[in-house]
Every structure is written in structure tokens, then in C-alpha cells.
Image (tube, helix red, strand yellow):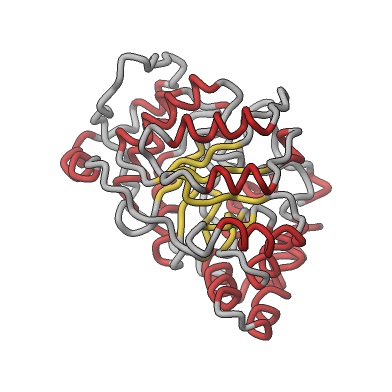
Length: 346
């Protein structure tokens, strides 16, 4: 039982916050632009959960004041769902509050771990409104806005701006393998919209690797503030730091090597593991930033098994199962084309 043995070893480090008041997301719409098309796929069970009583708080947050991204542990957040595939908003609220209490340094929402490719623009709106209501000015909100179509990328980025989020995570367009000059144009076009941008280099998923020189050129744009490097290639870290400067944020996107990534000159990690052990990931990243290798080893060694087993199947299937077992959400639903965790990996 993969996860059973993992939880026994790590239980003493986890603090689960139980939130009993199932507050829900407001109904106030974002300041829509004509380019958006509101989908009708949003399920009635999600719509019925919307409560307009907290609209005032939401409106006061959508003032376009970008909270600077931080060094440290940024969680690659899951999107809780009900067994029918609708958004589980009370669980999302509980999880967001848990990360505030656990000192998580950044929130990366609607990324790969958040299954954003299966969500409509309306569902994205609901998730982002709830995140802004709960954590704006407490944790910077980095929104996954990357996809293969540049028009969709811009739509999602403009929506994130309108809703009061703080930065956009833009992945290299997958499958089509753009040349490096096209990657530069793609990232700078999005950055020209005015929102801080973090480039996302994940060649294992996208099929294209951003060269160090491409990263350097992008870093010269005033709104391109960092990179999420999921290559797992630690040899690139010192060179990227040298050519991009100390003010350019460098996040690891690979939990298994994130501690060494930061010790070698990085600024933190965008972490799947932080869904399960947020406080410990925060503490470990802070120790790595301080170059305290002994403290890093003490904190990270118990997490090694979790770093590995949380990817025993496609992300976020194991993470959702683990959160369900922790009592953070009642269902581990991962909508098609994903599925529940196979029993042999429980």
C-alpha cells in the first residue's frame, strides 16, 4: 500500500485544519471583455452553491493591484471536484485557508495539477473569484493561463487580471514545438498585456525545451518576472542565475530536486508535494534559501518518499487521493481523461 506507508512516516508533520462553516463563492461576475465566451457547461450543482452575500469583499479585491510573487514554497493547487465532476467549492475554500495557516508562500492555481484544461471559462471564473476572496493580499495568486492557442492564453490572462489575481503562469505551447524565436514572441506578447508573467518550461509534457538564451531574452521584459523550471536539470541553475540576474525568480517545478535547485541558486519551488505537507515544504524552502543544507536534509529526507509516490500515477490523481484520505475533501474525483487512483496504489 504505497500511500498508507507514506502517511505513517509523515503524519507527525501534517496539520489538517477542519473548517466546518461551508461558505461558498460569490456570484459577482468579473468585468468581462467582449472576447470572452461564457460556456453553458457549468453544472447546476456548482451554480446552486454560489452565494452572493460576500460580493462586497470580492469587488474590493479586484482592483488590479498585483501582489509581488515571493521566494519559497508555492503550492501547485488541486481543484476539488464532486463525484459528478462539478466544482467542490467548500473543499476549495477549506484547502485555501489551510495554506494560509500553513504559511504557504504562493498559490499556483489552475495549472496542470489544477486540471485547468478540463475547465470552462465560467468554471475558471468561479475558482478564481473564490481564491481572490480567500487569499488576496495574504498569498500571491499565480494563475495557470497557458495552452496551445495564443488567443486562449490571452483570454485567460485578461480574465485573471480582471478578477484581481497577481501573475500568470504561461507554459511553452505543447505538441506544436515552436522554435525559440516563436517562444520569445509568445511569452512577450502575453507579458505586453500588463500582468506579471512566469514562464513554464516543462519539456517532458510540452515536447519543447526553452533554451537558456531564450529565458535570458524573456527575462529582459519588465513583466516577465520568473521561470518555473521542470526540467530536473540542476546543471542549468547556476548559469540561468548568472545570465538572468538576481531579481529574476527561479522556481523548481520538480519536487524531487527542488531542495537542491534552491541550494544551487534558485528561489523556491512550485510544488505538488505542498498540497500534502504545506508547512514542511515552506520550512524546507526557507532553509534552502538560507543555504542551511543540514536543515534542508533534516526537513526534506522524510518527504523523499512522498515526492516519489505522489507521482505513482498521472498528476493529480495520487494527490487528490491523498487529500481525500487526509479529510481535506470528500472525493478524489479526477475528471476524464484522468480517473481515480488504482487500488493497488492506495
